[in-house]
Length: 497
Image (cartoon, rainbow, N blue to C red; front, side, top):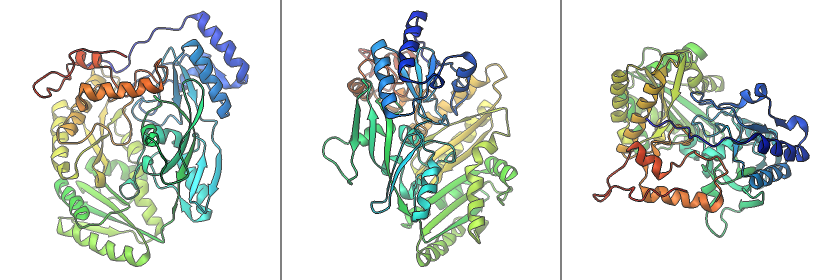
């Protein structure tokens, strides 16, 4: 397997000194980090399988400073990698040895909560959960809620198009933002979208959401806020067989019910979460479903009863309804703590992220189990069952020679099977470096060339997060990951950008 991190030409000492000199004019001394002991803090994000020390780190405190940094880097042809809270799980914010790591952590102001228009205007370093905390006194909240919402930043959420346990009903980040302010590679400040529900021209707002820092630096976000529901209740259903749980998911959606959240966990994940959080999960079950319904009290009571019956009809051996708000929060706490809980089961784990059609759920889980046995690596499954977004967690030990490579190979096969059944290689974590090889399986050469053309339009010098998300056609050809389309190989010319 080709290593996902591309090699880049080193920056000469003279050029680095010139960079430091120019940056010191626009930034205070404490906002420029270049000593090895300071740089090691930034050598990876949440995907810690790869580490790379950045050339240096800058921590601007204003949009103007971001613009000035970009102008300096453009002038010196120094690449820039934007970083939020560092909680990403695909290596999207992994530093490069020849690049400036641009941290947006200090741009952390909530600029405005507009109650009348139900919006919030925030800087990119604001934590996801902090938006809802600020809006709560007004009876409002921000819907997308990644498991890391206590720590992850909204700028990173936009860059990766993050989801969460409630994205089934309320959508991903792209469905919950109205406007962005972005600094271009030239240091210009532009506004994309508007406070209205629609704006003329191309939908660049959707293009920027999920662009992984490759097209511009996001410095301000206007998000939609929703009224806090009058009532919310959650059911916990346990099943002896995973296919039963999968069939129950399909039946709930088929009945025209759109839960606020519909999550599944398998036996390994259940036990890990229960040992960690003590949420009251049944550790003898092979699968559990958490289903939350929200709305007015009458509607929720009616739908809860209907969902309970569907669960039982499809083989649930037990269905429990949270008796109060504390128990509801405890049920969700177990699910949101599943990733760190699984981390206690092995020295390391590799968190995958793929999406499949809901009706192929049982088939994909059975294939994951077969691959797990074949590779001798346990896999815990935690996922957004309602929209088919899987999170297989592969347990391994990086200290054992060759085990990381074996884990990567297993993860790649899981993602490629997701594509085979009509799904995608990511649902909310982004591509970064983790899935860049699988992009060669997901897309044809014509599609990849179009991605490169868009990148070139925004960043002709390839200074923004180079080597991430979109592979070169040359890379795909070297991997041999070539689909046959209409009887022809899709990489005849191998153009490079």
